[in-house]
Length: 71
Picture (cartoon, rainbow, N blue to C red):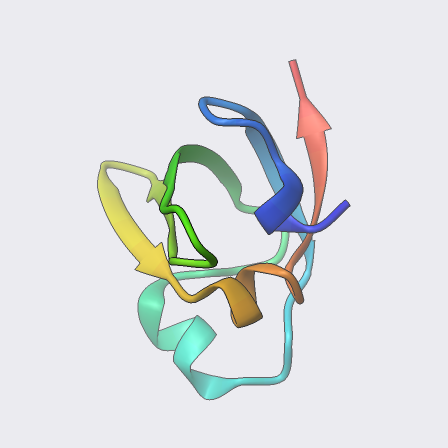
């Protein structure tokens, strides 16, 4: 499932990332657990918690990040 389709407050593990250097610079890594904090309306960004910080990511990138939901 894509990161964009995860429910709010849903926890997941990143399985695949787009080949965009910005992902690494923002702290996204395969195998990293993340939590969806919010999804802005009208195709806006998704805010995810990476460790102890929150990062906003554009919908177009969030749709390319594949994740696995965890309990």
